[in-house]
Image 1: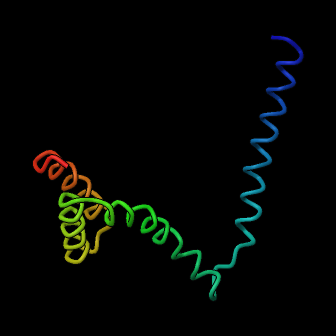
Image 2: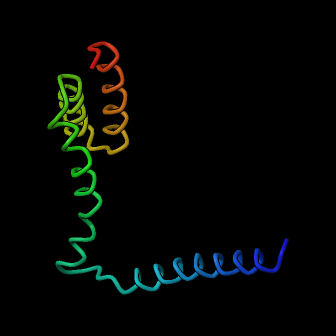
Length: 100
């Protein structure tokens, strides 16, 4: 290994560590109560909706039926893992059978 290679590796390691440490420090400064805390608690759900909504909007019968199945599983079980599993299995099965 050359000196330049070792220097590049060291610089990359320091940058990676700085990113992790910075994220930890900034994460500790985030609000946990009030409107800011509520926003941060709801953020993962809004990200999921923003990724799934176009698939549903521009999809076909397989996507619409899988959405309905997932919605029913979510309604009755209130279990995120069961809902995700039902959605994945149903979209796979419906795309295989309906050919979309």
